[in-house]
Length: 340
Image (cartoon, rainbow, N blue to C red; front, side, top):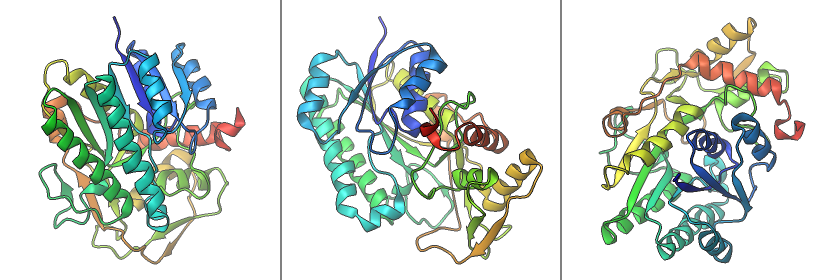
């Protein structure tokens, strides 16, 4: 009998790609999402890709009654928790909303998980919990000192889960720290379509590439890096999704608390990403160098060895594939899911 998984935030960018992989691996999926930063049209795209349906329930993780109803009406085996707000810059402008969504919402969800007797949680965390370290290669044993509100909300949720595991040793908890998710499903059916101005590099370049925006802004070319632009560990969203399935499978044999980085371990500079897009397009990407942004770092990337050791997982896709898939999604969906 297949397991039934609750995916909060399952119509979002990373959530939708994970739902696809869950369905293709014959899991049953219940998606719970308030659609605040996504579209219900994603569900039609998921069905096209997989030829399978998931159960969709519109709701907010802060709505205890709605959550309790989900657990009562569906015999759930595990929860993958993506739901939350994720814009670093915005989190400093409206911090209370971020603490409410990402921390209070998580507490309510965890309480209802415990009430329902579900033992397995896979949590969507972030490399932002590390903050500004003395070295660029981040590993799981480092001290955690996030430098923005978003990162602090993720660390608070992590701490809650660690305490939950200490008090309930039979709980199966995985904390997955993402680096920089990019790319889209190879079908071009689902991908990232940010509302307003993109916060992340690849969606911004893709919008420039198709003429939706006139040029890219590069925030500083005087960083202490080989070409002066910032270095980041970009990971294909499908690699990220497969990490969640690996975590679920691992719990069949091991109940210890799992905390791992999900990244490639290979940083790329802004200019390297631009060159990859230009190679694919056969034309130049216009850009302008502007001043550094407050809070940016010159370089950071993952040490992904723990994920390989504990999960047998490692990233498969290189930068060119990330850019190809991003561009295909953007060309096929110039206005995101509004084109459906």
